[in-house]
Image (tube, rainbow, N blue to C red; front, side):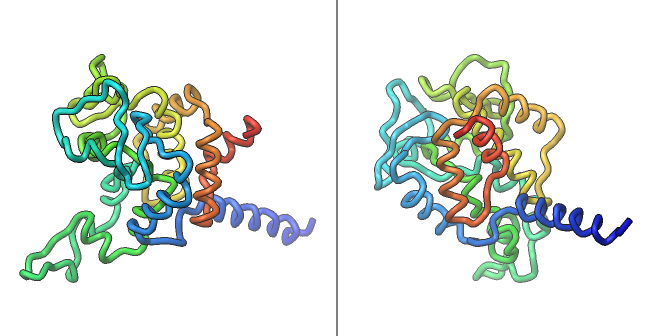
Length: 247
């Protein structure tokens, strides 16, 4: 038996799987990513992820009837681009985020670390931060209050935003039912695409449940394809679900 003939197909399959699972390597600018999303992805579907709020080309929010917030009032009037998997969740895998870097010094000579240092010094981090598959429009106040909290199921039955059923308590967040599948497939994509990011066992199990409970929509499939064309990599999780449903 020719081992070369057997080995080559296996090698090519492994290489292909690696390429398919690869993350963003085409754009490392967070600002550029936001502009592309505004102009080339969401131009005909200006709706926020959590609350289903409409927004215009100037990023002004049309809050849903019954939406309320007691904090970040000004930010409640505009759309912001939310990292569904918080930047800190993958950012802390980088030493520049955790410990800083000798070049991370401000104009007063003071050292800094965290997101600012990782963004300045690490290209891999910038690619992850700018990955459009992980960026979604959200009401600014919701983005602010969600912060970098992990998603979970909360015992509280009270929404923090009135008619928008987004619940936040004890540094955890429970999203509305209609957003859970999208969130799950984003978390699963980020884990597949970037070796630096790993979900906890509990978080992974929750995302698998949400993925099954809330199937992909036509818009989610269209969004994924548009981003794939712009960013030159696909969300394999979303694409596989779209194909299985014929979308």
